[in-house]
Length: 373
Image 1 (cartoon, rainbow, N blue to C red):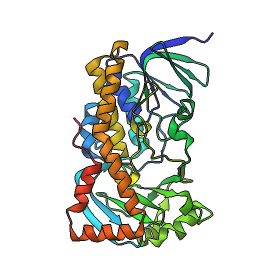
Image 2 (image 1 turned 90 degrees about the horizontal axis):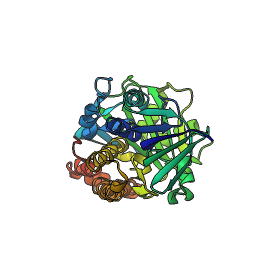
Image 3 (image 1 turned 90 degrees about the vertical axis):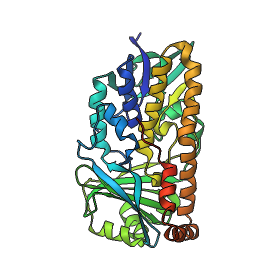
Image 4 (image 1 turned 120 degrees about the vertical axis):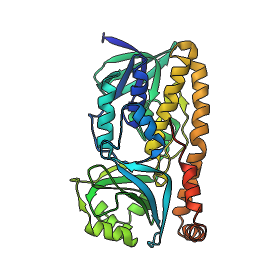
C-alpha cells in the first residue's frame, strides 16, 4: 500500500498560474505543487507580459525588471501585405523568457510549499476529499485542487473535459533568434492563416512565436519551408526569417490548441491560467491573464479559508470573478482574430485604424486589465 501524504491544496501544474498560486497560498496553507517537467524549460509562449501584473509579481518577491526584462511601450501590427500601424501601449509591458521567469518563480515557490516533479495520472473527488495519483504510484490527498496544467494536458483527458474531445485547427511554433530589433517594441505580423509575434527578452534574443491553422501549414512540407513560402509573403517576416539567426537547435511546437470555452470550476477543481480559458495570442496578454487568475483564486482562499464548509462559496465566487475579469476579454480576442484572419475584413479594419488613431489603443484596453495590486 503506497504511503499517502495530505495537504490543504494540491496545485496540478507548474506554469505561471500554478507557481504564482503556490507562492501566494503556500505562505498560509500546506500546499503541494505537482509538475511533470523539470524547471526551467523553454515553452511555446509569446513572452510579452502586460504591466498590469507587474505590481502583483513584485508583491510575491519577483521583479522581472531586475531580471533584465525589456520594457515594452509600443505595438506594431502589419497586414498580410506588410502595411503597418504603430501605437503606444496604454499600460506598457515587459519582455521576458518563460525560461527565466519560471526559474525565478520556481525558486520562490520551493521556499513556500512542496514542489514535486511528478506526472499526475488520476484526479478523483469523493467525500469532500481529492485523491491524486502520480505515474510513480504516489498518492496525495487534499481538501482542494487547483488545475494549472496549461493549454492541453493528459489531466484534461483524465478528467474527460469537454473541449479535449474536439479537434482544433491550431498549432503554434516558437524559437529565439539573434536579430536587430527595438527593445521597446512588440510586433504582430499577419500572414495567410495566422500571425507571428516578435519581441525581445532579457537575454537580448528576439522571441518569435506564431499561431497558424493546419490548413495554412499544409501548404508547405516543413517549418522552414512554411516560414519562407507562406509567412514571408509579409515583407516584415521575409526580412526577419532571411536575416535572423536561430538560437534554438529546433523550434518548439504545440498542436491542437483549443480556444473553446472552459469552465472556471470543473469537478470541483479550480481552473487557473490556460486551463480556465485561452486568450488568442494576438492579444498579447495570456501570461498576464494567467498570473491575474492565480491572484483572484488565492485572494478568495485567503478571504474564505481552506475549510470544507467554504467550498461552495469559493467556487461560486471564483466563477463570478473569473467571468467579470476575463469573459469580455476572451470574447474580444475571438472577434479580433476573426477580423485579422479575413483579408478583406483586415483591410477594412486597418483603414479604419489609420483614419481613427485612437481606435487601436481602445481595443487594446479591452484585452488588457487594470493594474493588479
